[in-house]
Image 1 (cartoon, rainbow, N blue to C red):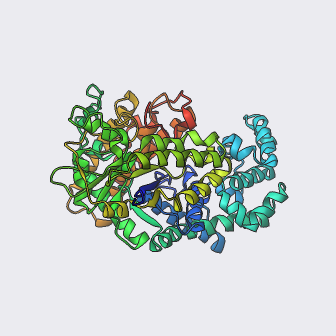
Image 2: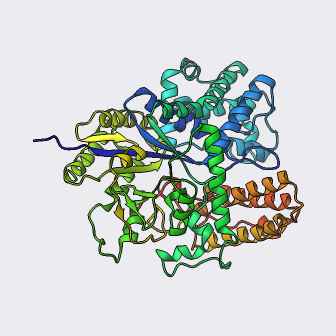
Image 3: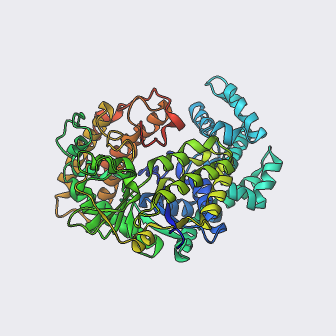
Amino acid sequence: MSPQPRLPVVLLWHMHQPQYRDAVSGEYILPWTYLHAIKDYADMAAHLEANPKARAVVNFAPILVEQLEELATRVSAHLSDAEPLPDPVLALLSESPIPTAVEARRALLQACLRAQRTRLIERYPAYAELADLAETFDTPARIGYASDQYLRDIAMWYHIAWLGETVKRSDARVAALIERARDFGPAHRRVLLELIGDLLAGLLGRYRTLAERGQVELAMSPYAHPILPLLIDFQSARESLPTAPLPDAARYPGGEARAAWHMQEALRVFRRAFGREPAGCWPSEGAISASALAVLEAHGMRWAASGGSVLHGCLRSTALDGSETPELRAWQMPGSALSLCFRHDGLSDLIGFTYQGWHGDDAVRNFIAELERLAKEQADQPGAMALIALDGENAWEHYPFNGYYFLQGLYAALASHPLLELTTLSDALAQRPKREALPHVVAGSWVHGTLATWIGDPDKNAGWDRLVQAKLVADEVLADATLPAAHRTAIERQLALCESSDWFWWFGDYNPGEAVRDFDRLFRHQLASLYRLLGRSVPESLSQPISVGRGAPEGGGVMRRAQA
């Protein structure tokens, strides 16, 4: 009897952060890009480096790539030439004076507490002690008791806690700082800044090397992570939710051209950063429509991936409705050469949510058992494969030790399993050329198979209307044939930042107040910067919040399960 063929298993990790930099001051308004870089992006590379048989697809949003490059350059410039650091929280590690204004000091104190309490703060008694003191100091009347030394110490612990687990276990500098625990001086802060600089400077090169070794397939999203179906046509939201409320504007003006711009710019950044052509694309939030897929294929993509719930929506009311695990097949639209792959939502959510409270070994055993079951069920299906896709950055802070034992065990178990073949999407598709015929595409995303996370809610629709107003003004200015090329490019890039998906993700009162406030403010700030580039007055409406959050969603709302 011939041995059972191994089931191809693909892990796709999506890396994305929106542009947090103020276009006017050059200062980063939120620290998430460099914090995820030194923790999650560093760890995800290290786990692959530690196991030469491990393989994965790593998908980068190009706007993230540019931020990583800029942050590395600016930290290096600070270390070599004392140039200002780009982030006020990071600057607490330098010798720059700490602001004396009451609200500025409170903002810095609050920022140094934005870490998962159980996994990041309480792991370190010295950090937990400082965090407890912060509850006393964080009032206008008491912030004066928080000395500069206290603020610099809590900033040190904030950044130590946010370091990747592989960094903490391999770099002696971290162990020495943890042992010291308090009263960090300029030399100690310099050591931590140098470590952060090293991590930022080497990060993209590590992924490029992994790709050159054949362990990683690098893929991309559209440049600034827009929701392509909505850029092209607001009506696409009604393909999955026929009664969805829409913005006042009938459509986003020139949306198809903007979708093409995001792909062209993404390709430019990807080629420069990684020295190769991407074969595939995780469209922003896995959001697809027939028109969006046509844009991807027109820009050379050979595969695109989305959520299993999207595929189920596409098959509804067809002869294939009710098919068991259709997401274990590759699909193709009539007349298209673009291969469509859909993630197994249940397996993906196990990693994204369920396993964070499990012992790492138990989680690995359970996950492998689920895959073994699929492998046996699909033994007589030659085209089967399993795609597990999720954020490569947001789940791990909820795991013990940043998911260290889970990820280490997962790669080890998959890399040498008799029934499972850890591979990449391009290799899996090349080895299994069969494609199922997908009759039509119903627009949706990996969240519930719809686009409701980004449109339909009154606040989300209000955000789109403000963006449409700005786009109409931009179109007027860009129509001037005498506009200098550099100015035209600056406008197009700033417009792209305003088109990012993140603003619309966070609008809605079901989201937490702090996050809604931050992203609402940043969206309005990006729009105001666009108006200034256009030489027009900033509308008064942009001085008022669009949305107010009052919710407490799972995990703070940064990730969502595939099903409600």
